[in-house]
Figure (cartoon, helix red, strand yellow):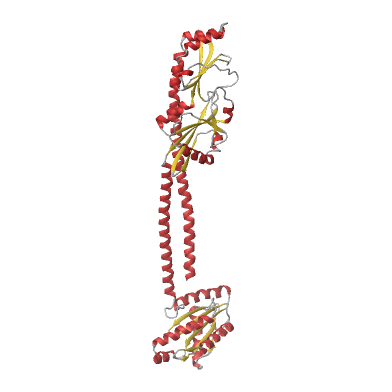
Length: 492
């Protein structure tokens, strides 16, 4: 019975492990779904903030363009510089005319302004200066490459319905970053694709290879004030190298979460494009956000709660099963001797007889009782009688096979079912048991003997018919003087 309880316990434990893994997978899938929904919302939010900021600056750049390059006098000078013979003279006049633009360029963080002819050649190019001593227009010779390092806004120039070319106003990445930090907090970084960096010209700026991917670079700001400490950003980027490095090549908006020093950060990557629509890099938005940690904590709490409930249920089931097996055992076992009782014996015998009928296999039956047992009780008392019963049960258990069924029939009578044993083999077993009992020396009592009745089952037998035959054999053994084995053949 202990083996059955252990087997049931193992089944419950394996079921618990299987359910635990299944519940973990379900909860983890749900957690990841919720987390991805939240990250998608962060992507939409970051993209909307960036677009709003860029559109705001577009309106500002439109104003600057109309203020300076919508001036008829300036347009005339540009026309003269392009068409006239003395272009140097007109360029000097243009520079004097737009000198106030330098203040606006500094104020609005406009990096470059270029005036191009219709064939794409640069007539005049200049950039903002940070110090008053260097407030001067710088002319660049840029015939075959583009100046990048910011967002380009292009406007066509017309004078008396004649196309003069275009102005390109380039807003620095730093300007966008600074305004985003002021309004939306967090930390921002523009990652530019390596191929784009290699094509840039103009006054050289410092571009550093990103820790996230060797394919992307970022422009270092001279006086950048970081919302997130630099050492934390470095650790975040190292985490992003594993989580985001491969995704960057796809040029699609995405967001990932990382944990650094006990805090969670959501990092959104928003694709940026040039004026032609070509994707050139990402706006990276770093934000301290412990909402993802909340998802993880909630998942852990829910999972542990279910596991505790599941474990409690498992313990309850094991306990119920154990009690059930114990009650079943008590209902089948004789309390005094610890062997099967008559009810269990009848159940086993009926099952074995079905095998005899179906497969025609041999089956032996032994009934024996203790000789003069009443005299032992009367002479030495019932405690001694109980001792004799228990001792004989132990002797028999040591001398029968594991497949043999040994039970107390009632009082001083015992029965043994011997599967796969014919009449001859059953008689040999009975004689072996008789001799073992006879040779044992019992405390107080000394020598105790027993009489045995033996028979063999036939397919036509019922429990009553085979027990009746064995009982008749036992009666015959007692009639012939006790302490002997007698057999009773089935009727043919």
